[in-house]
Structures are given as C-alpha cells and as structure tokens.
Amino acid sequence: MFEEKIKVTVSEEMDGLRLDQFLSEQLTYSRSYLQKIIKNEKVLINGNLVTKAKVPVRINDEIVLTIPAPQKPEILPEKMDLDILYEDEDLLVVNKPKDMVVHPAAGHMSHTLVNGLLYHCQGQLSGINGIMRPGIVHRIDKDTTGSLIVCKNDLAHQVISEQLRIHSITRKYNAIVYNNFSNDTGTIETNIGRHPTERKKMAVLPPGKGKRAVTHYRVIDRLNRQMNHVECQLETGRTHQIRVHMSYIKHPLLGDTVYGPKPSGSFSHLTGQTLHARVIGFEHPRTNQYIEIEAPLPQYFVQLLKTLKN
Image (tube, rainbow, N blue to C red; front, side, top):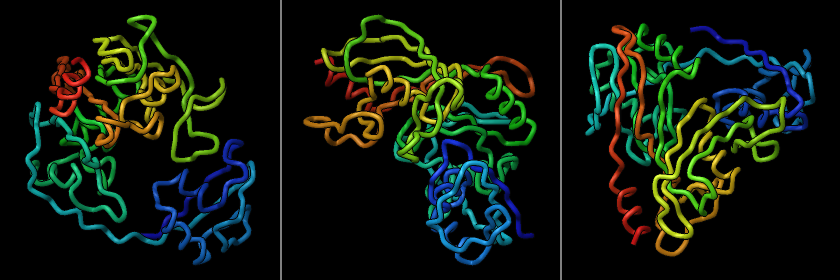
C-alpha cells in the first residue's frame, strides 16, 4: 500500500472553519486522526506547510494532505442472528435492528452489520466500497430500523447503485411524528445540505445551496392530538432527509433529539428517532424483475402505536 495525496477546496459555506473541522467534514477520517496528520507536517494550504489544527480556512483555499499508507484493518466475521428478508446469489435484504451501526469505522470495528454479514455470507460481498464497507451500497442511521440492500458481488452493487442514483428504488418509511396535520398527504421539496453552524446536522438550505430533496408523506393514523403515524416515501435520498424534512414542516420525529424535542414522560426511555424503513423495491440486477420487500414494524414501534392510540 502507498501513501495517498488528497486535494480539497474550501467552499463558501465552509469559510472560517478550523482546519481540522473542515477536513473532518470533507473526509471520512476522524478529527483526532486528522489532527495527527496536521501535526506531523502532512498538510499544505495553498502550498504552505501548516502544523496547527486551529488555523481557519478561507474560501477557495486549496488544501493538500498526505495520508500515510494505511494498515489493513482486520474486520472479523461475527455470528449474529440476522433477520434476512430476502436472499439469492447476488444480494440480500436485511431487516436492520435499532442501535446497530451498518459498517465499521475507526475505533468501532466490531458488532456492526458488516461483521455479521461477513459471517453469514462467508466473505462473499461486493468490494466496490472498500474493505470497511463490503457489500454496503446504501445505509440507514444507527437508530433507524428496517430494510437494507446488501450486494454480494460487484455486478449487483453497480446496478443497485445506479438505481439509487436515478432515484428509481421504492423506499417507504413509517414514522411517529409530533403535531396534527391539516392535510392527510403532501410533498416536501427543498434543498438539503450541511447545517451552516452545527456541522454534525443537516438542514434545509436556500436555493442554489445543498442538493434537491423530495419527500412524499401521508398520514396513516391520527393517534392523538400530539402524535401521528405517517408514511414517508423518498423520491431522493439525502442524509437525514426524512428527519430534516419532517422537522422543517413542524412535525419532528418522536425520539429524534437532533431535529426535535427531547422525549419526556412515558416516552423518556426512547433512544433515537422512531423511523422504520418498511418497504424497499428495486429491479433485480440479474433478472431485471421488480422485487418489493416489506420489513414488519419492530416490536417497540408497535407498542408505541398501541400506547398512543389508547
């Protein structure tokens, strides 16, 4: 393996950020790792060596960093009780449980879905996304449950990835949200991108910034004056799209403390958003046949619906 040079340019929305913060937003490396890279004289700003992580970056700065030759991480297969909704020689659809990270990252190399997939598939997973994310063509958040496509070979990965790119995959989510709706159906169309000040969050941005995001929703059940059970269908698939969009229209997800209120009273035990990827539909990469898979609602979600209804 060889060292790698990476070049990034500072955009207007990133102006003024600390160097380490900017790089952590642009790259997949942790902030602490990037601080070591900076300290070890591996970063140039406009051709000038920089060794302090707190240096602010400016619009149009060209930053070049040299990443040392990586040591191949050992991602171990782990026997897990995976809920497989569909499987054939090319792919499988997994019903991901709550509180499970999809793939390993620095400092978190075990107990992820990938660890379980390596055991279940005996290493037969696509390699397009690298050794840290074998088989993973798309993701859902740690606390979101439900359907996730996993590819066993590069052919399947390329075909499914293209369907994701052109937004032809059917993705329907169930969520419990705050506040009553004036209409039972609606469409939210905005631009979504990184929050201008809170860099770990996404946000609705003005025209010309971020990326187009479209969510269609319908009310399944009006549970009480405060909560509603809704279905959200993605037309696009931006990071945190449903969570951001529902918060934007004043219907944040129950349990989502990033984009909504902290749950209280009988819901104070909730950890993370009540969001479930119920339906996923796609054209099979080998047969071109349309397949639609449905993941049943998790037990905690069903119990919440009963509690709220009563």
